[in-house]
Each structure stands twice: as C-alpha cells, then as structure tokens.
Image (tube, rainbow, N blue to C red; front, side, top):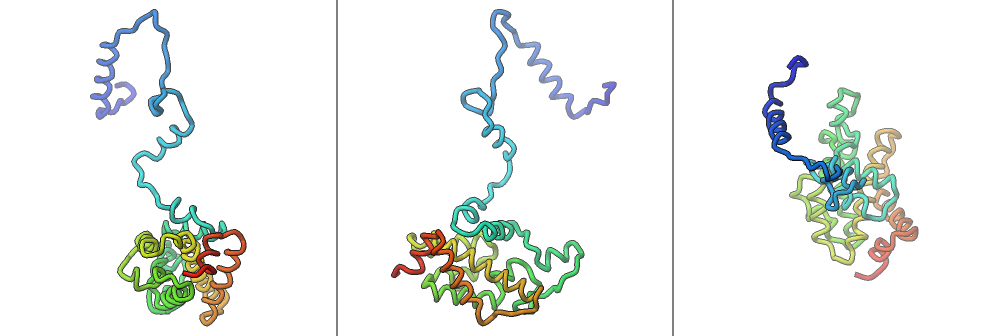
Length: 225
C-alpha cells in the first residue's frame, strides 16, 4: 500500500495469495517450466507470435491481396485500398491538408477510395469495358452495384466467376484498380487524361503480366471460354 497499490488489483492479489498458501511443494521433485501456449509445454516462436494477435479481427488481406499473381507494387496498393489508406481527398480533409475535394474522374462527388474505384461513373465504364473484353461477366458493375465495401465487391465477383477463371480474375481485378488509380494520378499531377485509351492500356499490361508468369491470367485471356 505504501507504493500506491491500485485498489482494483486487491481481489486478484488476495486470490493469488490464497492459491500460494494452499499449494504444497514436494522437495524431492525439481521445478519445471511449462509453456502454456503450446500443446507440448515447450516454448515455440510461432506460439509467442500468435499471442500478440489474440482478440484482434482477422484480416482478409492474405486471401485478397497476397495470394494472387501481380507485381509487388500493385499488391501493396491493393493492401492500402483494403485498409482504406489511399491518399484520397476524404483522407486529406480529415488531416486538414490541401486537396481538390472532387473526384478527378467525374468531378461530381467527394473523392473517396470507394467512390473513385467502384462508384464513379467513369470507373464503372472501365469495369464494364474490361468485363466485355475478358468475357468475364462477374466484373461488370451490375453484379456488385448494391455492395458498399471493398470486401463484398471482391466476394461477389469471385462468387459469380467460373471456378477455373477465379485465379486469373484476381489479377485482372487488381490491374483494373491499379489502372484507375494511375489515371487518377495522371489527371491530378500531370493534368493529362487518357480516358479513351485506359482500357487499351489495361489490356496491354494484362498481356505483359500473362507472358511474365501469370499462368492463370494467360488461361483467362487466351483460352476459349
């Protein structure tokens, strides 16, 4: 008490003191240390690592972001999108930093990552064009028009896609988001619009990915449906 012992800890202290008094030690048995976080009682680095995440919500990033073929910069971009960390106007406003407010693609609404990539009429035209070009109807905005977050759009697209095309569609999904983001940056920082050629640019980059090492994407683009 002389060291300002917190009153709320007193019941735990009394409980521990009673448990120690009720314990009988055997002098002929040596002391042992047991690690309670593993089944064998021995310390493991993996069990110590997992304890740091107890009580936290599991992220879908490993499935959505990392388990697909795409360049590392595109995966990292998708990870930022998944966690709402893109530097769009809404995030800049929350920090009172300079921003243009309006979406640079449609100049109608406040720019948020959701609006920019999925709600903007210009972005939906891109999704529709890519869906027609790849013959993947699950990418069309009509499939996920009623969804309101990134994860639900992803799941709707994967659910409606053919099972043999899902791996390739994961790469296409990332590429379309990346292409829209690059168009947005081109308009903001370079004052250049590639509206008429953005789908062609996505198509060319998809073919580069396919012949690099994206086998599933190659099957999606070049094999008959």
